[in-house]
Image 1 (cartoon, rainbow, N blue to C red):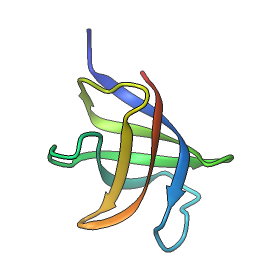
Image 2: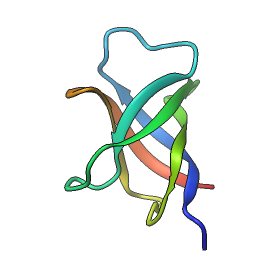
Image 3: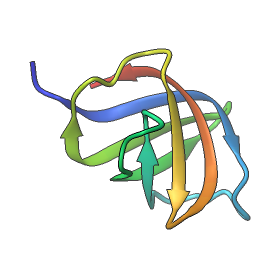
Image 4: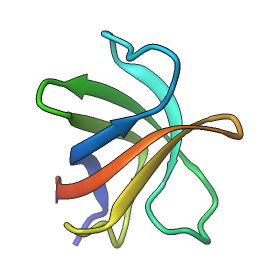
Length: 84
């Protein structure tokens, strides 16, 4: 089974300065001990987002948290609902 190239997130909590309207490059973690992976986040309505990963990631499952970063600064996070 191939790794996930896209991740859907809900219950998004954005703590960055301004919520970007366009796709925004960021790094993210889906496991606390993992090194950040690179992707692009597209914020949607109703506290949802879609993340497109630069490299497909194995082991992405609904219910896991996804935390977004700009360098070492936390931008926000949410809960994974689906991986594609």
